[in-house]
Length: 396
Image (tube, rainbow, N blue to C red; front, side, top):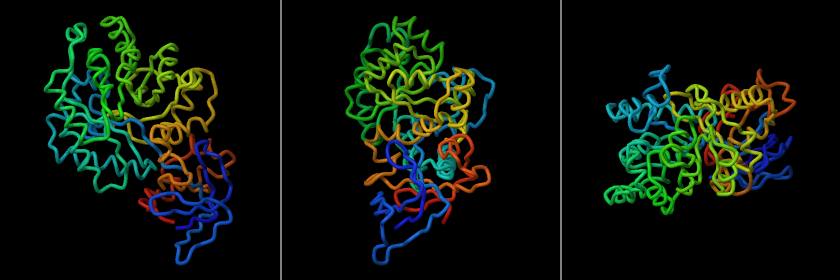
């Protein structure tokens, strides 16, 4: 397929190219350049008036709780989503698998329509939870990165005693990791240092919640004399999720350990738990990405996430963040975690793309494409979504 006369956000820096041609070779991006000519019998699509950009990467979701939208909307964060005592866990435990599957599938469809082509999900429920997500997403043209977890948590007594992970749970973990993409650890307040170090030895992607709330950070300090982030880093995570209450020292430590930070600003706001300081994260050298978090609390919409983060950050911290920087958090920054194979448009990357109407009523005239996408665009501005070289939503 040859896409002609398209505007493009190219490469790791999302450089704006006013007009070019892009060849799609199977599932991947092939050649890019103005001088490209159609091959024999190649499909040619004229994309005059469209902006081609990378598909969004939603770097943190809990899609399993799609069945519980807005239940307990005024409840505290702990009563809602605590991994042991939260009523979310009771909902998941007492729901029919067919119902969970149906609503997870609906959330996947919603994400594709909004230009999200990859999402990284923290999968509760052990192996069964992983399989529910596999079955729900199997017919949807979207890429789930599934981070499973075992159904085991340690109390404060075991944490203080630095108890190791029991052998039965180690066996469960081995089976789990053979069936998913990595490990999604609830948080350092549920595990001892010994258990966190055991997780670090697993040869797979690792992610962990950290410093989401002021209270969780204080619990860590009272229990172990260390911040949540310092303990979370014992698991050697690829992704540190939230970091809303991480100190500058914690952020510098995260940067030295090359752990990408995933912020979830709308979910934090909805749970009355503050707003992450993405400017400080960037200043300390952290790679920052964005996730939409629990579907129970928040809709999986990266357009709304970017708009909210951009404006509320300026409103609270009085520091302007460039729209391009925010857009990179949903695409190119997340691409670093996956070796630049998704989240960017460049040769040999997966052809996961969004085609935005430059002349959409809310965007025209598009003087600044980054600002237009970050705080004006919505799914209404999407003409089509491509996943691995196929148009899977909309049409030209």
